[in-house]
Every structure is written in structure tokens, then in C-alpha cells.
Image 1 (cartoon, rainbow, N blue to C red):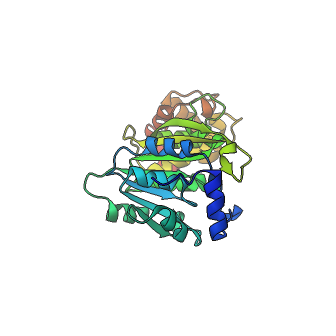
Image 2 (cartoon, helix red, strand yellow):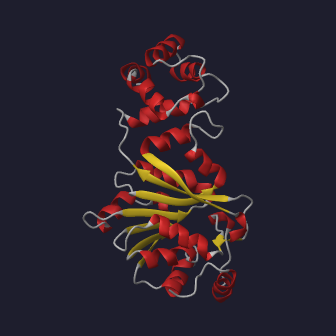
Length: 289
């Protein structure tokens, strides 16, 4: 591999040679510590045969390591200035750049057309803070979802994805994520390894899809989970009856599921939400249709 892009010297060289400076509107913060991107790539990719998808490659700090580890890396980029730089710095042997907003892309089609039979798909990204959740939920809801998602995101957001019930950070995002995936922390990342330096620290976490749970009409289930957390200080009964617009039905549902009316949503495990939904599915569907 060439000298790492993820250094202060090379980041400044690339900026000066191409007149490229970070854009706040794109949430760009370039990584200047090669050990960080190397560890992310090592955690995300199992073999050279993996198909890798990256969003927001920037000037290629992480992309460079992904292309060393895998034979086919697809990078989605919206900054028209950057593809030329990426191909010059990294080459096009292993790299395919799609100049498109990932949120507008047909990710099912992209994976379906490029994935070989039996091939693993790894999604890897230093996610722009302002679109972290929309990107992740696009992947969670995709039919052709990746096998793993390894992302750097704002530390506070990462803690919500990892949170267990009864903890301060536990919310509807925790429940919906853990319904679909096993989640683990790879490492904490200091704000000091970015240029320009952001105001907060980051975290790298990895999502691995599982098939532990299945419910009827998942969008309705997710809607119920969100409703249970609308006002965290209120009991689950209060939030549920507001969603249903029916106090008696809310009390009946909680009783049938063996959940206390005075409990709060953050006390419930993923399995508790599933039980609350499944034993009351017909009643919920009838009420919300």
C-alpha cells in the first residue's frame, strides 16, 4: 500500500493539490490517524472476496484500507470534486465510485447486481453525523441488507444503539435495532483524530443481522415501540393509551402481556415489546387500521 492518506501531511497535500477543503454541508471531517481506519477495516472485512459498500469516502482515508482488504469496494459519494481524487490516490482496480446520494440509491438493486453467489456484503463507513440514523434505517429495512454494518458515528448515538433496558440511553432506537441485529462496540474514537476537529467524540460499532425475532406486520410493531417511548417520564400505560386513544384497551393489553401499568418503556426488554405486540396483534391491527 502507498503511504496512508490518513495523516496530517497527506491530508494537507491532497487539499492543496486539488484545492479541496471540507464542506460542513456534507458533514466532512477527514481522519488523520491511520491506526483508526486500519482497525475499522480489519473489524469489518473477513476476506478479499467480500463485497464492501462505503458511504462518504471523502479523500479516501478509510477507502484506501478497504481496497487493501477487499477486491471490490463500492463507494457512494455526493461531492463531485472527490471521485477524481479518489481514483488518483487509490486507483480503480478495486474501487467503484457511485456519485449519488446514498439515501436516494436503490441499495437492493446495487447489491443484487454486484453480489456473487454466496458472497458476504460488508457496509463500512465513517458516517456524517447529521444523516446517521436515516442511513442505518435504510440498511435495516433493505431486502438485500448487508451481512454486517461497521460504522463510526457520534458516541452518544452509538451508546443508544448499544443500550440495554433500564439504562439511561435505552430508547426506541435501541429496541428496533436490537430486534434486527446483534450490536457490539469496536472502539471509542477521540475527536482529536479528525481534521477539522468536531465538537464530540466518536465510536465505532458493528451491527450483525440475525433472525432471532419475527413479528407480523413489522412497521406496525415499530410504530408501537416508538409510541411507548414518546414521553419517557410517563408510564407505558399512559403512552400506550395515547397511541391507541383507548384507555381500557391499553390496560387490557398490558395485563394480557403480563406488563405492569406503572412500568416505563425503558424497563422493558426487546422480548417484552414483542410479547406485548404479539398477544395483542389482532386488537392493535383492528384499532389502528
